[in-house]
Image (cartoon, rainbow, N blue to C red; front, top):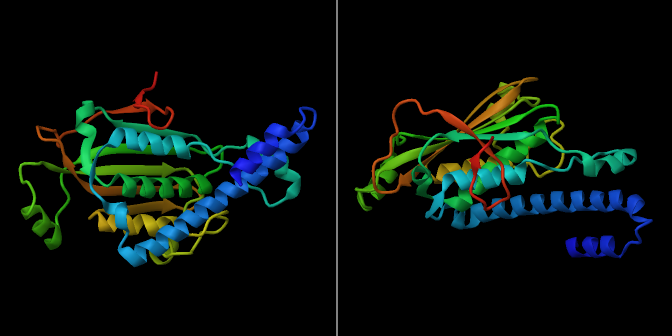
Length: 273
């Protein structure tokens, strides 16, 4: 369908494009929304069939680049409207701006062993939820930090005993804070992480983002903490255990944060100027 829309746009006479282009943009918005819903539904079913599969496969990854890539993808989205009269405005609307800060560390500190696929899914889902809840006049702030290892469960202690003990452990801490509509404590406690449940005025989606995120984080041995005030915004803090590169990495003391300029996905993040 995407290729058909692109072909239609390319073959449209220039004089007709200003009229047709908003309608094509509306179709692309609906297609992207449907794709996201289907992906979440498939991931939800897969999680119940094979225990999240490759979402928890451990690989070496650059956490700073991974987080920057996720922020680039989530920094702009189309805003769908229920009224047809507003259809022409869809393509020009964007979500609240996304900013990224990471601890000021040597680049090698961010090379860790964890689940890239799982973390990408978690961060994309939570960032998508923040974007849906935050008006364009608001803001979304993402932070990445390293912290001391989390307390290990008995199962994790057994797994660690079977691995190379010389590899230092730590935890990666991701914080996503928005200035959106916020959630009540009752909703957080009883509905937020339930599948197929959406908050009021949540918009498009299947209501699976937070549920899938918690499932993946739990399988990785991590936690999600939520704080929210209705009318003021929400902060999600995700912590997951990671294995560091061999060598010394400082996990104590206060590290300054630096803002990163969001660059095209896959490019190395760099400090903003």
